Image (cartoon, rainbow, N blue to C red; front, side):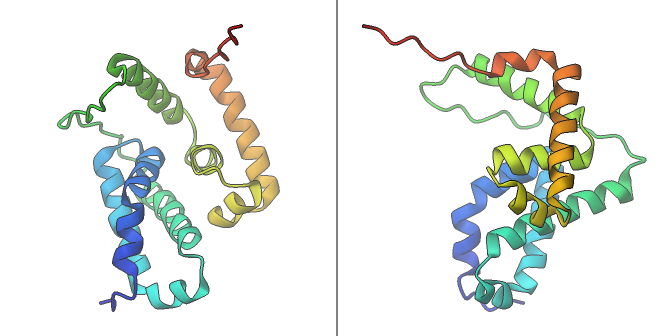
Length: 175
């Protein structure tokens, strides 16, 4: 196994974000846990070299994306199952109903995309990666990221017009 060398601190500091990223890629809590666990095991095996190279976040994103696509290829004949065993945690001061509607709309919209398109949208807009960084994470060209982003956004506009409620109108400045 891995000599710690900062691996635990790395994972602990990023666990919440990594869990959300895995969930956005899979659209399923259990699948996200499995995906993240697999990716972390692979990262742990190469941790000393990855830590020395200085880009563990990018390396882990690449593992997550590759594992996500590989799992899909192995199980594409199976349908996605969504479990409702766990209720979302309630944050104080938030409109639970509105945030639930937004989350459901986003999940349904992302489910309408291909795996590659979904990954591009997650990397570009959730992870806020540049086109070049997203291309590196996916192992594709920048042109592929641009075209997949364009196709994905067009598909979302066509198949999920209800997403317009996720865009907040700027509040008027009061004089």
